[in-house]
Length: 258
Ligand code: 5IU
Image 1 (tube, rainbow, N blue to C red):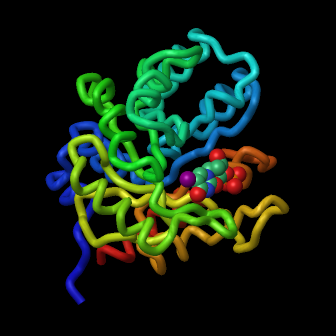
Image 2: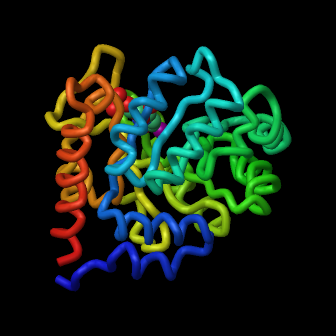
């Protein structure tokens, strides 16, 4: 079989500048690992991110679970992003009409547009959600991911829904740089495929989350990046575990392109 394209080669196909930067960063840093920093106190997040920042290409946040969210926190997170060279992804999962998501992105307490390099959106409301987000995001050099599949049991994002989501991404590929998905939902190399629900052993949690291993995600299901939360931030030694995930995920990628 023909060897697959490398991240750097695929960067050339990407129509979004930030997306091209991410492809390059992944190869330079040899990391296709995303930390999901789902802690509720800003100090704990900053501590964690400073520890594992050198191992990841993206730090993913949920701004609305942080009890003491402030502009100061954002500035400190941005300082860490510079120090360790990673991008910031706010996992906001926008899902309203275009006009409303525009405000949710640009306004409110969190002013996500000001600090999140990447956001994501559900496709359930149709292309208007992307139109609304890109109206404020494009001129700031931001990028968006569409949720094509979810990791949770019983997810309705499958089949025709997933296919229609892929079509939406293709239409708006100046702003949409890829997907949150469990599989390589299309063979278009310009896009990035990011997979949550990953830990070192397969299994599930008590609330519907389903886990695959890094190699199942990247070798078997052919996605590009893994998103890991609890398995890293609940570890006794987050740095070591993050390094274990980084190696597992990047080696799986290297195997795929060789
Ligand atoms: N997340 C999922 N599954 C999905 C989507 C997002 O788990 O399909 I879209 C988020 C939820 C959480 C992180 O912030 O990814 C996974 O965390 P754990 O590794 O702790 O399960």
